[in-house]
Length: 427
Ligand code: KE4
Image (tube, rainbow, N blue to C red):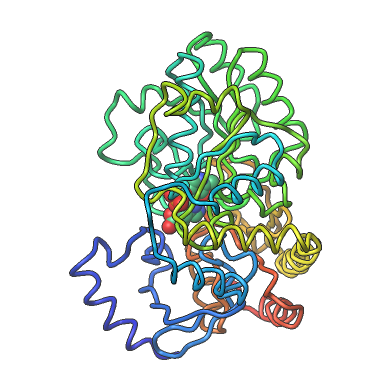
């Protein structure tokens, strides 16, 4: 493959933007090569500026459940643009999107639209603190909740990729209010609750972790989390920026049967545009300004163009819930192909990760938490990533990200991917 044009662009980009990118994981540092620059995308395909075509299993880190440039979504956005891009006033579209979110996730009686997952989680945590009058929160090592100061502690995703679980520039005071438990280990939560009784406002969790690679909750973990938060008067926040509308139309609460107090959404809910949301029952959400004392605002919150992308995406998902069976089955085929090569695979619906656990060449291992994920062979992963890319298959450029399957990944492409996995030399 020829990447000349991408190289020229990257050379210029690095002089103008930190690392040449607008989000660290896009720099491909973990896989020892420069990123390619995308020209356009269609269905399951990315086409880069040198004309190379890739089967895309990153799907822009999750939004692309329908595939790229879905005609219905594009048409809705084009139609919205002709009416103007932003008004700073309420619009009918925001009402419809709020209605659709609530119809899909009934626990969300009231919702606030924002512009990013970071903003959604940061705001939900502030509501929890304002409602309970308590300051501390519990998160899980390896979970990533965006880049707000208090949540950049033992975080996953790009921080794990860069091996910097705690970010620079976060005041000690913020980090002191963030307690870290071990995912899938309810005793680690219990200990923190007992040591900080009356001080913890909320537990924030990825109901299926996808930022240390995919790590599903062990049997009973979420149920125990729900019980222990109730016992200590602590709110439970499901960060569904990835799992929302992905695991099922109703997200993790439908998929697992466990119900949280507050939910955050991103990615799919915006249909690929900068739109995210947080919500919960009326009692909690009535604390949000201008109704209540918890302030949160945004010039482009509920942007009318982004809202139309979200509405059209949810409309398609609501009218054809068969998509969830289709993408689950396809992801299952990929998982079997990876397992046939001895790799450890974690999967939840259309989310999956193949792990290069220690000794993967001899036998599969187990990845149930951050510590397990950190033991994976990053060099072997990087070699796998580059071989797949040379064969026209783009998976996330980090062991600590998820693989996403969209409705546009037709069977023939899934089968082609499985054949490639089967023939790949894993060094
Ligand atoms: P954004 O601010 O990037 O829209 O959302 C932050 C966020 C919050 N919660 C969860 C569970 C998330 O996965 C994310 C962001 N996900 C990463 C991918 N693992 C975004 C990719 C990136 O950082 O460039």
